[in-house]
Image (tube, rainbow, N blue to C red; front, top):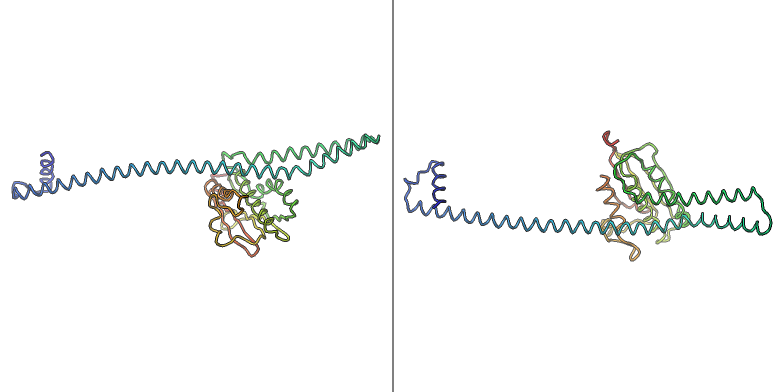
Length: 305
């Protein structure tokens, strides 16, 4: 009854007088409209419930993805730490060997009664220099695990120079030549430590490919510059390139071409860092000689500097 009165009021607002209409037909019309209202309300309730369920499922999916992302990040950190420890071993092997030889030489001279104050001082100075080198190496590696909390002014040349001291000993031991062509003028604001991790990962990937394929005269080129108003850095190798069928998959999490030796998250995390954190692009293509990875960052605006 209440709905009928409401309908009558609405009809009057539209200029329709229910008293001039056939009562039976009008009653039938009211029932039809009321039935339509009920169906509409039922549909709305079903829609509300569906939206509520969908919202709950989306929330669960977001939480699940967040947890998976956190697990991937943790896995990536552990994998990076393993690689870092391996590279520290490469970095430390030569100076530790030098310290051992220097100390042994000094001990031998003492045992033979050939004490020479000047030679001893020079030997001790060498040992101190090697120890400083070891200490600096640890500091270089520690910086890779410090998260950047704010954007700072930097350049690809500065980033590569910082990574250079870490990678070159390993490259030298494996007879891999590294060539640099870095633009000293281009500067931008970003997250230097995160960019260092990406560059290190790309270079290590190139190194692994060159060793795995037994490439003659293995070479890695690191080039930086500007184009179309943006800054770029390329890591190129002569390892033969990436198979076309997997070229589009290399950034997928848990996808690896290294079988049990690979985690499949290195390039995935590089993509996340460059595109999500730094607002740039990470692309890969094949050249005539091998793979070319390109990091591209937007030029800094005045407000960023």
